[in-house]
Amino acid sequence: MARRHTPDQVIAKVRQGQKMLNDGRPMIEVIKELQITEATWYRWLQQYGSEKNATQAKAVKDLEKENARLKKLVAEKELAIDILNEVAPGKILSPEPRRRAVRMAQEKFGASERFACKVLGQNRSALRKGRPVVSFEEAQLRSDLRAVAGKHPAWGWRKARWHLLEQPQWDGVALNKKRVRRLWRLEGLTCKPKARKKRRTGPGAGEQKRLRAEYPMHVVSFDFQSDVTSCGRHIRFFNVIDEYTRTALAIIPRRSFTSNDVVAVLEDIIAETGIVPTYVRSDNGPEFTAGALIDWCATAGVDTAFIDPGSPWQNGFAESFNAQFRREQLTGEIMDTLAEAKYLADEWKEIYNHERPHGSLDGLTPSRYWERWSAENQLAIA
Image (cartoon, rainbow, N blue to C red; front, side, top):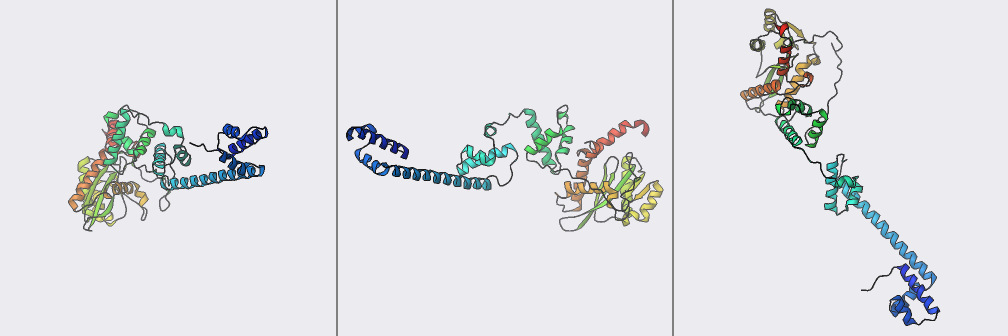
């Protein structure tokens, strides 16, 4: 097979042949020495025989090389744009998505590994580095986190961590915040940022001596929460909580409430706990300011702590409880009947009191916190 000569090689051989001819050597020896045919020699001599032709030929070849280089750069730039638009439309931060993006660029666009890594900002050694071996403990922890997220979709990694700390199989295992949060994110679970609290302004917002609960059943707050059943009929939940332990004392759904209904619920709570609250905190709704409730408070020896009109933040514990009940239960359920609403309310009350960790209680559940307080203050209770 004939070899293809570059312009530089052709010029070198033409000069070598011309020198041999000037030395008196015959043509047959020249073409034999150069390993070409006589026709090729004369063609080369015509194209590159003179210095001017050789210079022009070299300039043309250099221009062709430059054009080829520019075409390659344009093609690579267009390919890089296609890869970024198709494979990585957004910013990729974690290593594993970067690896997947590089592999996709290689498979879909036929890009080389070097080029794909350069475009996507992936280190080639990091690309080839295999995944670390997952231990049995970490695999079990991931499985338990997925189970918690499946059972309680509205929970974040903090509540999931507190919940697992209460499980006996994780007793003594290092479940620090960074580890649980990292695995929670690797599993693709919701990682809601912690909201910053805003300072409220308005009537009573700056008071320093506002009533604050100091022991269980010291201050009981309550409020109404509205929703609808699937038929569009109105339904109201009467929510009662203990401010000190955050315990949900009652979640009662009905179509409507009167002050006598409110009194009946409070009497049931006293009968169940065996403790009469010192104060009850509520807004100025007609059911709470009616004579029946006021008379009952006077008879039972319970003081009232009404909030200022138009200041719901003064009843913040009840408002926060309503928000959690809405987000974790009411938003994800469709209620067809009042009986179904009662079942869902009782179900969430049980979860809230006995399973759901509370951030303000150091990750304990309200029932566990009440039990611990009772154990630490047995003499005072007696």
